[in-house]
Length: 138
Image (cartoon, rainbow, N blue to C red; front, side, top):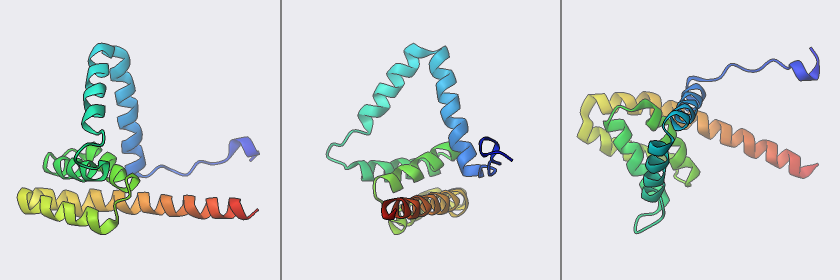
């Protein structure tokens, strides 16, 4: 195989879900730009730093997505939590509180999809850090 024909690793379910979500948003935005633009402006305003930090807002969004059984948002906001510097223990504590309100349905999503997403994003973050370290030492 030539360098241009490298075999791609199969994407994980978490990565595929994020890709599907982003593609869906793009399609919707092209077909309904007037609605998408207003929706995006609203959500961007909601996620601006205010009295709550962006980290706190991502934890809230993750909790709400677990209660709502919204798998795409669970993955998206798990990543958002990590991107905002949340530690695994903070995410686990937030989903534990969610499970206290949402019962078995929330707990089943928390201990499967959210934990899978956490693991994958942390693994990817570690591998990116390691490649950054090796790039800096050259």
